[in-house]
Amino acid sequence: EERWPPPLDPIPLLPIGPQRDFGVASASADLQLQFAIDLQRRWQSRAGRCVFSCADSSDGRSTAFSPLLPDARLVDGETAMTQPHWRAFAQRAPRLDSVLDETAPAFAADERTHGVATLRAQSRCAFRGFAETRLEAETLSRPVPGFNMRERGDMLHHALEHIWSELRTSARLAAIAPVRRDELVGESVARAIAQQCRRRDPGVRWQRREAPRMAALVAKWLQTELLRESFEVEGLEQGAQIARHGGLEFKVRIDRIDTLADGGRVLIDYKSGMTSADWRGERPDNPQLPIYAVMLPAGLVAVAYGKVNASECCFVAETARRGIFKPGGRASSLEGMPDFAALVALWSQRLETIASEFAAGYAAVAPTIRACASCGLQPLCRVPASLDEGGIQDV
Image (cartoon, rainbow, N blue to C red; front, side):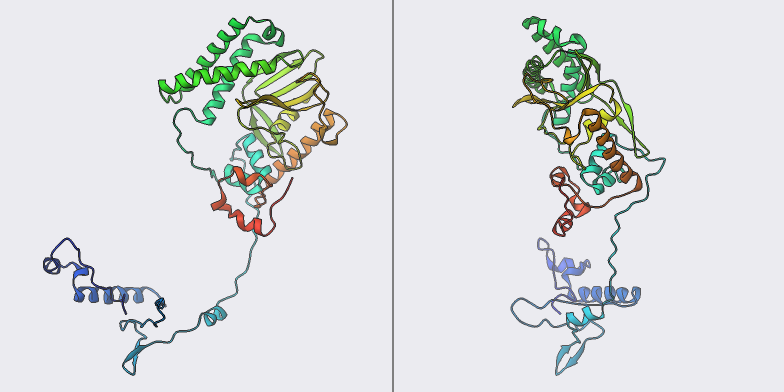
């Protein structure tokens, strides 16, 4: 009864008399009453059943129902209504069926994958693969001053591509004069920044800040390359290639292919952030290097991330023998496989499984142990509930 009809609420900055004269409903008790009656009548005429409810006040007093309600009646001079207990409502409620739907429609012929990103998301969590590729769900990007992390990574790729297009071999890197090497680094960095600024230019100030930072990083990386076994660069950023798994096509781009003195081949992908051997296990956190290896298995003896980072420059690799990236460096365990060819065959089986699940529409919310830390889809998948139910999977 305190809220229906609504209490007076005139505009505080205007005289109340003119408000009533000009029909401001909140300034007149009569108009508020007519407003409530009319609105209630329209509710009742448009619905087969109307339920009116109100909460008791926090001070322990029972709230009286409005006399405008159709079922209100006077008992001993007070308004009374039947107030069924919540338990009665719950007992009369229909029984709900629980349906666990983890399968989307199969991947259609007119749909397109997002390359490696699709298999990476599917491996981390099947729902994530479905949501990011087929629902186009993505986290909103946050603007940052200057160049963002992705742009810095792209510029690093372009700078290193130009340098190795000039040098081609580790022998030339070792033989080049320090002054000429610094000139080549500076030229490559300037070209990379200019190329990026044709797409988005944050301003001259940020270009001037980025150039020395990137030049120092590239120079540090070339020192790491000097420690390697002798090699020749066979291919650089060779354009999009097609990987086929599970009956689907995925566009991939390999950063670099090296050939060693004994004819062995090495596949390298540059990473400017934190990097680990995340390609291992039945559900790898990132199957990027296995995809490259399955595409180009001939003579393959190693795959590696080139970690080009201000804190540390190094190779994070899977190698068939010792010393490929660092003198005295140990060979990898190859996940228990007898040789690198057997490891590539194992990777191929895993990729087929992941791609086949994606193609069939498998979309269960079952993230790996680290998947949720890099995902922004929690409002869509409600992953905390699945974690409570033990749905999380380790690798």
